[in-house]
Image (tube, chains in turn brown, red):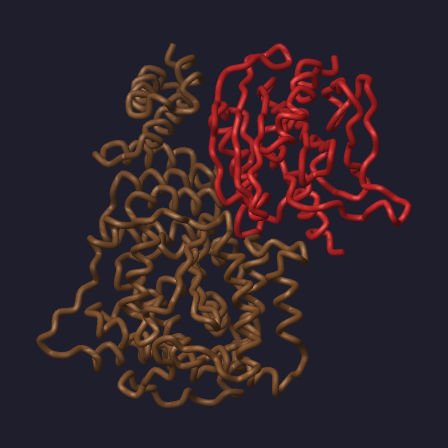
Length: 409
Length: 207
């Protein structure tokens, strides 16, 4: 259910001996599941009929109420409408039943709940390079619902463990009466952990991959983009961990998922199989950027200011594969400024990035601000004043205008 | 409890993101009263006079940065004042593992006010769980007889509450002196702002 849970699971396969151990325990991955075999098990307007599933839906409705009311929701109608249209396009037979919520959380994650509502974190929008990538993630999540993975894995877990009453756990998490805020980032992470209790088998993951690829190919998106998304996610996790000199080990479900290599190979094979000769497949990059563009500075800000230099730098380099611009150069400067390690000459690197950023016509006002501040620190007062004056000209109502005016004199 | 957990909780409290740990029912409180008289804060290099009694978090439980001290009136979820007394260049204002994925930057003596404000913003984002942070103003303001600054801001935290804050500070002889007020934006900020202003006006360096 939780995209990140799955990813963490697979990542841990990469690190050290766990991979060999997992391979021994689980054997060789089964044959690839063909997209053509993926038939939705849910039709339009699906409602549960079994008592246990009805109970689960009842609890989940309360969770959805909490999420729908959250302060952390991004409610910009242009972007939420865009997401709604997208899940309405790649959602298969249940397309009109899905709900989708965008939460302002700077994390690479998306999840589908058992009743057919999806939660997308704003950090996901930042990391997608085009519409096809986003469609791929959403379609993968829809695939879990359409193949009834949530209820199947939940029943399976209950049979095997009988450890928890889902109603009681959800009441603790979703119930406002219990005095717990669902909107809390930590709470949401816990919800993800809870949802991972209904963990997907490797077969379900493979099914969701195949189903997702099929759904986006039918909608005219290039299905090859899905494997690129997974590569970006793995790369960022590795970069963040490597920067801090450690391996990231989270979750312990590593033995249930296929290896990254096998999954990539399957996703590529799916894509090749799905493409109909003569049909045009598109990534819709321009349309994506036009929609996300207005909030991209905010999304970058939320990520970079967490001061996770490994992840942020990897992310900037990934986005810059489509071309550097003033916005990306500015945030590169922010990464070095916040890292601030003299041994790596971060002050100089930040100053260079700001100086490079302001050359681009799309440089944000803040690029001029920090360019000016760093010139000031270097003692280049006249140039600093000119840069800060440019900043004020671009942003006359800047909150730090009184300080800037004092400096400019 | 493991040490990093204690430290994380201490910082979280400083940012108004957790309720009291420990608790009075065990016969011990994390807080000690501060009366209306001149009191030393942080490492003792700065002193202030509160206009009414406040509560100081005891440092017994916490192995935190010596130059930093936290007060509250109604509990750390609702309001708090943090004092930074003479933080030296190259030091962190919070204790953190060098292997933490996300880190609050070090203070550097050559940071101008906007960069100190950005460091504080990182503190709220990295350690306080702020998902939205708005700078309201950065302007010059004398503090402790030096050319200081005032930084006003507000932030939406992961408990879905908007909080508002004001920091007044100055870099003196390469060290950061700062008093920072942070409270729930509705009611509590306005209710304790006069206290904060009185405390800032009363601040003196040990001399």
